[in-house]
Image 1 (cartoon, rainbow, N blue to C red):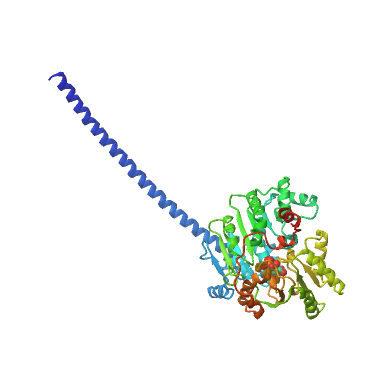
Image 2: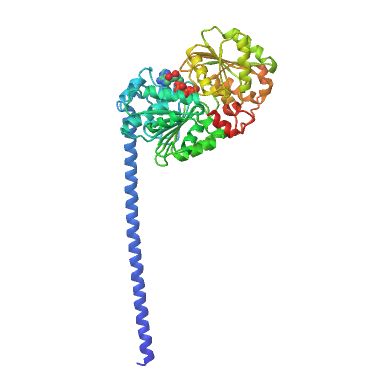
Length: 513
Ligand SMILES: Nc1ncnc2c1ncn2[C@@H]1O[C@H](COP(=O)(O)OP(=O)(O)OP(=O)(O)O)[C@@H](O)[C@H]1O
């Protein structure tokens, strides 16, 4: 064999060896892949089984929280859902029953339950939202004015704190309100509900009063009820830390998400816990302009609960008799005196709404001049004057209250029999909230509205609200046309109206809150 032949043979042997090696390597690789696929498949299966088991457990937890003893039968639940036109959307909504009677709340803290028992039974929004809230779900709750939404979001918050059972002095629960007076009212409600719960402290932060006391209260409170302006002030100076807040409520949520508040709310929410935060939004009106922004703050599987049918449509409380009169603008104040002669019997309370604070001051003066004992609440008054006016109206010391839209939302004043809209608000949502100061907690009431040509762009939306509540629609109103002008997502509503046009808007928002 020549040298060349030897080299050639060696190369062939090497090539063969290479091929074998490659083949072996290929086989090894394939085996490895098969093994990995098999393992992945097994892991996936186990994960799936685990997940299914977890969700089964979760369902059990819900039932344990809400209906450990199933005292309500399926027929009664069906009847409840139908009668109250309950719509539940989103998330895993199956197998969760509403809590129709308080005695189904077997796991609820006993002292809170005792407080609740002063009511005959939960209101529909309480019945429908509690099972989800007690389970830690994010909820958007939309129900008519005066239907007990404060207790709906308040009870699960308090219960959560009693379960945590710690001496924790961190702020865990934050409730944001658009007005000072509403913040104070929510604070009072939570204090009543938690009166006998040891170690739960609530504090209320709002503008127009000194900060010292609020700073002190903050140090020992787990629950904070606040208006945005003062809250941001206290955060920025380092007196308020929201990092541990894992239960966040926007009351009057659509108002809080409007342009005037949007940036403040984004800032406040960014300060709260990012892990496992439960976010709640409650209101009586849910315009589509705020829905995307609202959704961006919620967990993916949040639940939306509407009571009284589809509340994406603007809906007024049907127990309120709505009377709308189309009048000449310059005749309104004389007409108001006629209405007071008609409705004022010195027993029932009457709430009169003006649009601008200057208008409110003027009308207040004129009414006093005409001999009426009237209290007034608007943004030109000091906080002390506002609080005093509201207290006088609540106690019955004065049975007339003249207000701008600072009093339009949330205020729960007993026995307001009549709401008079001297000047129509800037939005029909505000109209629904204003008239909702009467007819609360199952009662009836009257809303008498003076409508002028200046508001004709809102005629269509108002006609829809009247029709939706089976109320008479005056011919004069239809004459303005039923075209509804699209509402813009911009600065409007209570605060906008109440501002001094000489100041910039942001500053005015802070002053008012
Ligand atoms: N289960 C209940 N049964 C009867 N009354 C209740 C019940 N829960 C709360 N209330 C009462 O209903 C009234 C209205 O409650 P609340 O102010 O919370 O209404 P709301 O739905 O928040 O109204 P708004 O939309 O105007 O803010 C209050 O006086 C409250 O004490």
